[in-house]
Image (tube, rainbow, N blue to C red; front, side, top):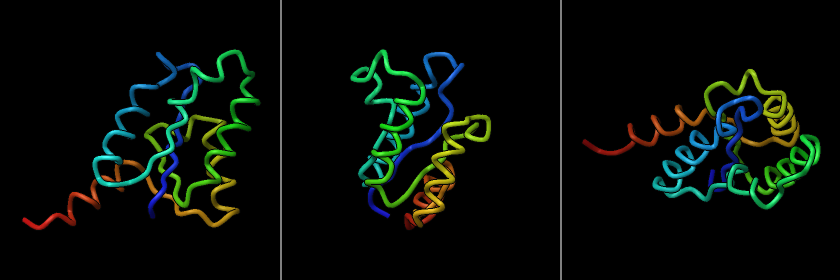
Length: 109
């Protein structure tokens, strides 16, 4: 589990929920993971439709071996599709919170 794609809700949330995406990316990078954060690419793709964004996000996701789900992903059509594709191509699936908790538990006291 080296390259992680962050998936979660954006549409309809304040600031497109970028704060949650950026916070998760920072935490995962601090743990040594290479992170693909779709919120970091949004300014480059301004003006695209939801479907066009999702196509680009899926292409980025498929370069990863793990998908990490943010809280609230269940309410996101895009996250559901990303999770479905991740399952179909055999990616590891974790929640951001679970992954962070596992890493912290692995640190010797």
